Image (cartoon, rainbow, N blue to C red; front, top):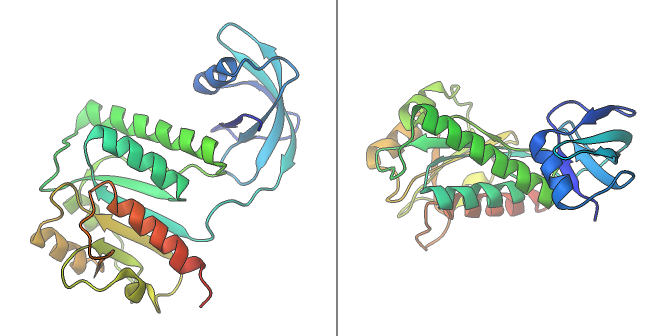
Length: 247
């Protein structure tokens, strides 16, 4: 299988350019040579056939050839906002969420968050997580890279959410008497699907109430207690099945 690489700049047939540093490193690790094929994508749909034209010690030049249509994305947008688990678990969560087709990820600071980030440290972690999403998109065959948003507090993020339309597709992961996800999804018109999930220890009752006030419906993913890094993935997988099944 040809090496697949994401490039932020728009691509077009005949374009010749030097790959960004990270992408060039992948080419060098794979020991590609001038004339070898690779595939590039820029997030605008499909992917581009390309060839290596020059290998330097640190840089790699390529030429873009033909565009190929490729439709491997989910036909609906699934977004998750989550109380951040510890670093290693967050890395794995972003990787797997990307493989499952997530469109956007919002890291949140909540009352029970173990991981606390702000300032430059937060910006560095978000840049790292975005790179994890890029790598997972390249590996999994996706033609779109999910956006990892800057870290925000739950209260600030909720306040910025648009006023919900009736039967908005917004869910908050809960337990106990919360209805199952399948029942909550039934009858909701297609649109933006958004899930809010808590950190280790879950959301507090006040945080769940604040989410409900912004149009989030309490839902359960089943009778088992899921870890903070498992619940968003379970939601993504269940939603992909529910929304893809015949009515």
